[in-house]
Length: 472
Ligand code: GAP
Image 1 (cartoon, helix red, strand yellow):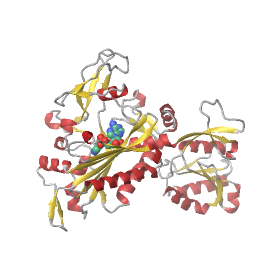
Image 2 (spheres, protein in one colour; image 1 turned 120 degrees about the vertical axis):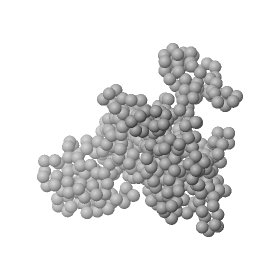
Image 3 (spheres, helix red, strand yellow; image 1 turned 180 degrees about the vertical axis):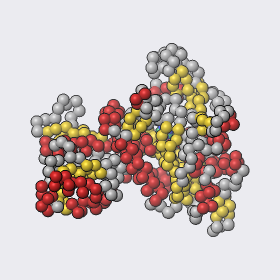
Image 4 (cartoon, helix red, strand yellow; image 1 turned 135 degrees about the vertical axis):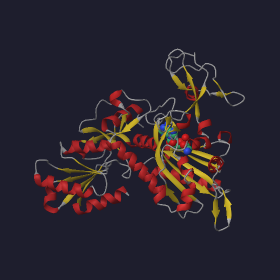
């Protein structure tokens, strides 16, 4: 597994991720995705939507607005309780999330007996300057505030949503009224969420603006455990389809004392990042908490009428909630490889020896991003062998135009063919197609596979179909 500096530098060099507002010195906790990064994220979203919505007949989608009625966040508990403990270092004035600062030093932030305050264990130091002169931890609400309309006062206060889930609950009745869904069924949403994190850290892992993919799966009360287990299995399996191997995926099963009072179960899907094992997704059995709270606060009955039993009930919900940016970061870390390859790609690659100044005689180094074809930002690259032979260029361009209908394809005629392969290896492009002099005779092209570097000759007419099959 590469270290984070390697990943950050590749992401910047190749245009996966840039610092937000970089020309103004950046802004903490906000990131921009470049040409390769935004394709990667789009493919991750598409893979999720395909698995969770399109491939099923019991889930539909919504796309709710980011700013919602402020009462939504009172009902959801975010106005009163969506807070992290924060403290300041009096010596260097740095601000920290108190629980993380304690954890980083092998300690645990305590709670006051009434449960409303925090107790800092003795000896905890500022991680920036080492001082122990720290303020008492205090609660800090993570929601970003704004105002609607021209007057800034309490009545116009609104929030940028800290999760997409509430846009699903508030549309529960609309979906029931406008579709033929029957419990058990789900409503899915992908979209931006905002949290004013005290310490954004680990690159894009903890950001202040990020994207969530959330499903609320509405079920009959009493079937919670079975549906929760089902969704844990489904979600764990999905991660392997986007290239995260089972041996780096783990489950954190919440013990009872860590569960919210309304939840009957919660499992986090964890991935072994270079900075440790961390959460990608939470899957919670939340009972009827959310629908009942919205019923209480809105005065609308959030019930389902079961036509088979003639019963009315408030459905329970199982919520798989994943972060696109964290998954993209995991996919980037997993894909990264450094190898020594025989010059001219003639033979098998060897893993690069860590710390070696250069590869052995006859070998060159390559960085390769081994994305699975379904999430790879560019699916294939098309190369004319030489750029100064118009007949090669013309055939390569027409092949490129044809393949563009299948997915994101790159055309490159600049530099030696070996260099062009290397550039695409580093971008993670799984396939390369070269138009050469034989193409002009029999209309075959070479089809190169990124990982094995194996080249085969295939009829150009078969290229689009082969690519479509590989992308899935
Ligand atoms: N509706 C439930 C909910 O929002 P969460 O555990 O707070 O649960 C779900 O968030 C997922 O959203 C996390 O597993 C993570 O992938 C992503 N996420 C949460 N906060 C994030 C942050 N500050 N930066 C990036 N992703 C975040």
